[in-house]
Image 1 (cartoon, helix red, strand yellow):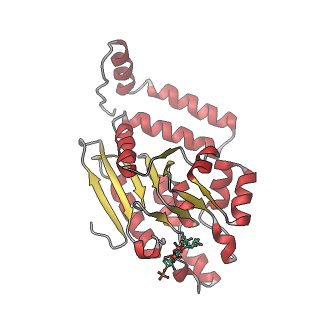
Image 2 (tube, protein in one colour; image 1 turned 90 degrees about the vertical axis):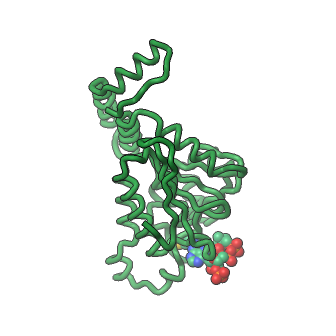
Image 3 (tube, protein in one colour; image 1 turned 30 degrees about the vertical axis):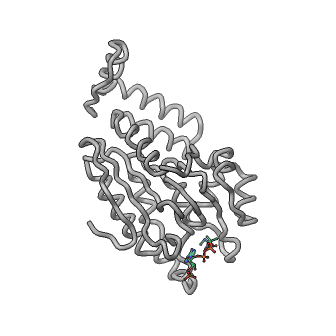
Length: 263
Ligand code: COA
């Protein structure tokens, strides 16, 4: 499918292990996340999720900028009823929430406002040394409305989330890694190739085991420790019903690489 505001590519590896790469493509406005971009991104995610050739998805903005937020020119004249009825990000949030494949945000340059919030909707963030994160909505007289006050607080804690939301300041990649917003910081050189390499290494693992791991970690964000531990215990026990558990442990004992059946 051809899109106007994103590029969606299938990076071939092996069937079942291909990587879906989505690159925002509005460089003239620093990849501002317009209505059209969000619609196209939602469609691309849904297509990738249903494509059995793909094992993982990477979302990026390219080398210079991830995304400088929602498109302010589109938003500036919105009325309350427009904002309420359009629910601008609900569809995208649902598409990411329903994605059972691993989704990595590869952030180079600015990830501000909705850009930072979108990155946080992904399973984890890998940043290049040039990445800059922020929730500058306070400077526009608004607040982060795509999950920023909630996800940022869960990821970095109340104190730093308050600092970011109330001052609107940016944090660099080093600070973002230190406070738990990003999983890893990689050198600018060959950044996207390295992230794709990480996505490939994930896609090469047992697919049901990946799905169960992802569900368990997500559960930790939603529930009490007691309920989360019970959920994890049951998922762990369920792995013993898979052929991949038998294969993975047999391969370890026989000192060879596992041949996953994804069953
Ligand atoms: N929505 C719409 N257009 C945007 C945008 C956004 N979120 N962010 C940047 N742009 C546009 C600018 O208006 C400019 O367009 P122009 O060339 O037609 O004037 C172009 O992108 C380049 O941006 P510019 O501000 O000139 O680049 P810069 O390098 O000086 O500054 C930023 C970069 C990211 C610091 C600055 O663009 C900025 O603060 N953007 C808004 C961030 C924000 O508030 N996001 C939250 C939105 S809810």
